[in-house]
Length: 297
Image (cartoon, rainbow, N blue to C red; front, side, top):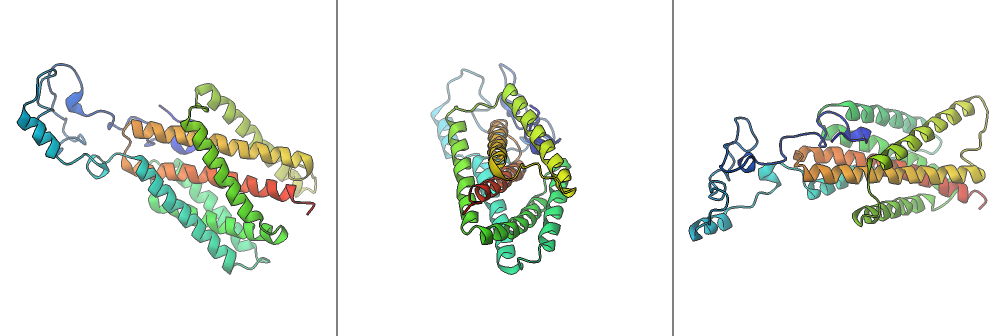
């Protein structure tokens, strides 16, 4: 299935047919088929599995059952498939890299010198575009993006924190709360990623981004549309956080489908990148919203 998430919609994405979905020896009916040349199951250490050689419905002997029991399990290193553990590990490493970049900017970058942080933000955007449109997954590029984006977030968070002490920690806790709430809602089935749900969410997201671009251009000419201050700013901030939560739900659905479809293990890096993008979006919107709410402090 093609993904609606731009990160997961490239060729080579784990939502496409990867050939890992079903072993060749269990396809068809009646008799066992041999893996094709070049198949990930060619030369499989389980190729001599007595169960794979049995006609359907035939009783296994005690010796065959013992052989199956003693055989090593088909873990990720043997099958090369993406697992939830892979996604968690890659996402943790990506977020740690982002935090390290943020800490570097927080402690080493002077507040008055924001040029380096702006350059890091621009570089992170370019790297993100390369990752998004690149056919294959590149772990070094993803970690590079995380470091650059983290540097920018650390710099802007420091500025906000000086103006409103504690706002950075509040934004981090708010982002974690949104992530946890969406994960619980998704796993419990309260949120279902249907085609209609996806279409509506993407339409709202495109309208939101277009509105922000118009506001940016207007601000360059000295016009203030009030989208980042006052009551309207609060509404815009809440919509932005809601869209970030929507992106998280798409990420969860794509990861679940990738694991179910037997995606290659390397695709766990793409999942980590998508989750990081969504969390960065939520954090920035949360930071702005809390700053607006504390504007009168």
